[in-house]
Image (cartoon, rainbow, N blue to C red):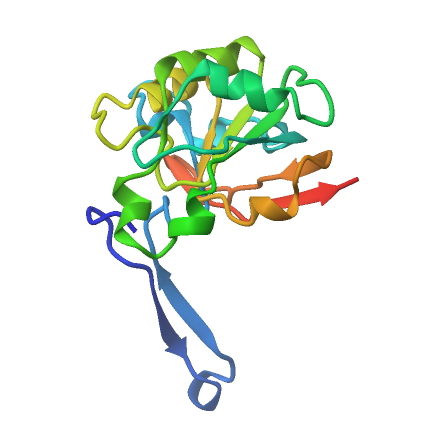
Length: 203
């Protein structure tokens, strides 16, 4: 969790002895763990989560393996073009792109994971829009470069109604296999995002 966010908590709310059943109360920020950013997260007039079409979160997926990125590296168009050549099939309009920087694999749980990650530049985000992608995910806590407080990748993608998924895990198991991505958020009315259970159905 970023320092601006409280850690999630789960508290026993009822007991079987008193109420006949067990239940917990849950407290967490909508951008906890693997989560989706709706346009409203950064854009004041952007769509809120419940205003996004459900089929945006079910799409053919591609993993782009961005090897060799340094701490605070900048993801530029040539990285995307290079890794796309290894994709199992061409990118089509509405497809989902998952960016594997290997940051989650190497640094999860360490301070470097939050503040030294590679980030997508505006030019790379614009290239993804040129490809017609409908959803973009990344295995870092922030799709933007940690030193760029203008958040160009967020603004470029969310401004075009392309949701962003952060903290994607376990991309190494997919390799370049074709898959169908299921990234269904909770149906939360009026929110800027939601945790998701991200599932890939591999062919």
